[in-house]
Length: 210
Image 1 (cartoon, rainbow, N blue to C red):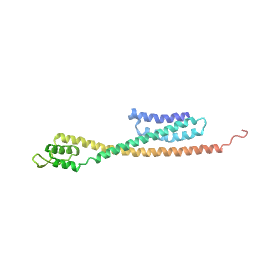
Image 2: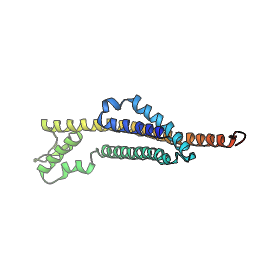
Image 3: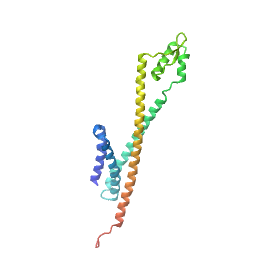
Image 4: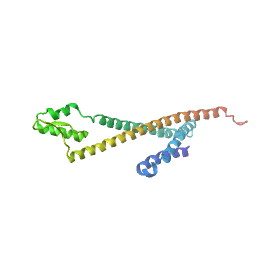
């Protein structure tokens, strides 16, 4: 059981820390998924076997600890991804021109302020709006090169945010499936192994003369 405990520990440590320090080597799917699949089977099996044996019950806490640590890290990761998605989604929804703000480009008493409002709106939303000039004429704001550059940089940032939302949503779904798989495997394999070992113990017949 000590050997199995060490194997489980290596299957958890190597992919986890390897992904942090050597991502090109350890982030590949066949390492991450293989280690995860083996742990899903070996952890509940080792836990069930160890609690049924007086000589190996000291290893039970180790198997359970690795499983619970996996559950905890998956939960934290999923919550962080959900928080990121919520923040980016709210940021996207707020990228709408306020009617009151656009009206200020016409109704404000200061002509310089009216022009600045039109300029800020273009930089933020890329939409030239009408504002009232010093002569009280309604004209469409003509953006400068710097204004256009500012908006393009912001537009690229918005496109990147959409890609991040898409990627994080995919990762959230993946973590949810992995979480369900890990918990389901643990319960099924644990109860199966536990009942199987108990049945063997109940049907065991000691040799005659003992």
